[in-house]
Image 1 (cartoon, rainbow, N blue to C red):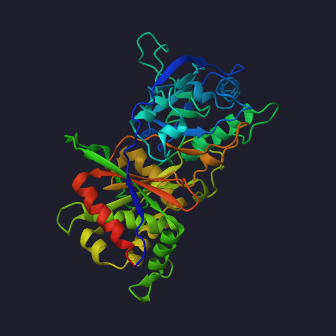
Image 2 (image 1 turned 90 degrees about the vertical axis):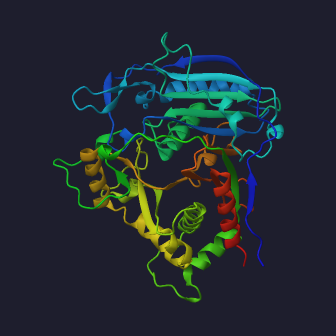
Image 3 (image 1 turned 90 degrees about the horizontal axis):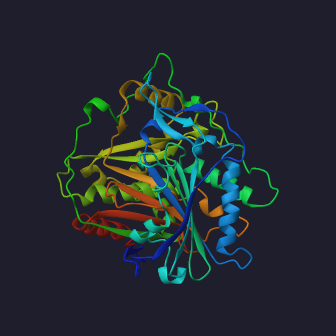
Length: 449
């Protein structure tokens, strides 16, 4: 018998990080920037909310936290020249009715804080909890007297009593997707060095994802729901619990081996791309769908975020700043997910991602132009697994761990980077207690070999 994957409930010993805010200010570009409006694509339009990433650093005697804060402040002011939209404000275009960014050099936020605890007291950093919200301020009280407008981008540097510190980046998602945010931080890191050029020249031409005129929807798009069909939901408050499922290289290889077989027979889907992501996503989908106590004829739809930069013809520049992510989908009856060979589930996930071609992307952009819709699925997998935030090199070194700051949401599963040599990916699942019990049993049981 093999060893089941490790699953750990998120119950950190410290809930209050005892953070004290020392200083908050607005930072402005070091040079005068052009007053203009930044067009936002149809993909951008659905991302008018704030997200944050959190990055922890070990103590560095050559770079105490106060020095880090000074270096970062100067670096941010420099990058706000090529990233002028990050210092702007969101407004609605009166003619089109769409959101856009006024590049008015209104400023980016910068906060300096300290915590009374050490990194060792926090424990394993992979387990996000409510205390982390103190490390990523998402609004500045001194921004406007009525506090209606907030900076689209806020940095916070928080020192710990051990000499280590955290850096958070809180942005309106209209500015960047995950890849864009990583590139932005690479450029901030480069400017924190002395006399170093930008790491990457950013591309903010969002017209590259403009819908066609006239629009031409060439495919069905069940992964999207038209705005006219959206109804107000009576959200039922539920007690949710979160767990991390740590997958090792042996377990990833086991999933791939299962995906290559058809219960001992040759797999029917010989064209299936058996990647680590597809295998992990298929297992998560099966466990989530079967954890809900409903009829087996129910259709379960999985959504997976796909970076479309390299899928377009011609491809988008890798340094494209805006949101270049669409949802691939896979749908099946719960009964089929329960009895079908694992190879078929992986095949459905693989087919979903392979479906996202240049023509499909153009069709999606045109569909949104017509319908102004939103994602439509039962479960969404958001992968921060290989975005590379932990590889960004600052003068004081690389982060010891980086991850998105997340609120509990039973509809989203996060794939987080490894935190140890024997771990390949951390799977963060949040569900009501009964569903979590079923999910855990199914997840564990799959590795009983």
